[in-house]
Length: 178
Image (cartoon, rainbow, N blue to C red):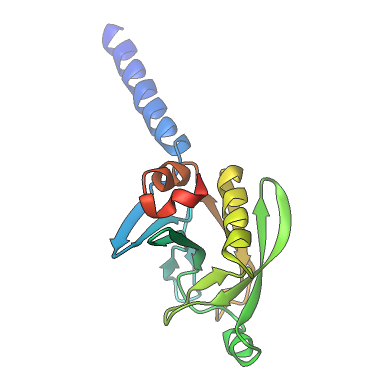
């Protein structure tokens, strides 16, 4: 009976530790460059393609500091080509994604960024972009709805950003977000 109680207690402890680690937020991947830091969080789970392949989207904040000037980008990497990418490129590169931020669903505008399938949140000024990034960080969890190429079915990825603010606080390039 003592062995049975010990096994039950160990099982409960392992379950508690696993559950606690899930509640602490997703890990932040930090990539540094000259005057730049990119802080990335992967989606909570991958989405399947028709081929059976799994893709894991990423949401990143890129902070650049040159002297006293800072710039911030919020980037979304869906993990592959999206339905309608050719149409978007022909219309000037803007794309809308439905996001849920703090329980409120809203339409957000993004533009193609770089060579890979990456989108950056569109704002006219860095101050507007920074205000949006702060609202995303304050929400803790956000979701982005998109349509992967081939399936064209709406897919929603959820990002737990609870550790992202701490990582940004540690990066001098992100000083303006404080």
